[in-house]
Length: 58
Image (cartoon, rainbow, N blue to C red; front, side, top):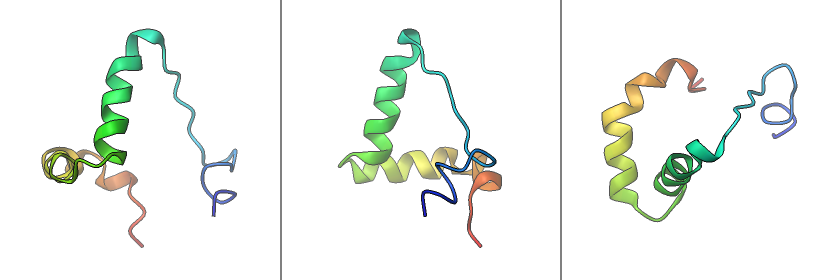
């Protein structure tokens, strides 16, 4: 599956993370991938509409 998405040069997207962004990036990773289910649900409810076009829901 990773060869079709993450590792595919035609479809992957690289984002530079600088030290200035590191704290905010860490917080988002913790929220979306961590154990805080209620926080994740709230974030998706509040901001999910911003990402719906990029979602693969086929």
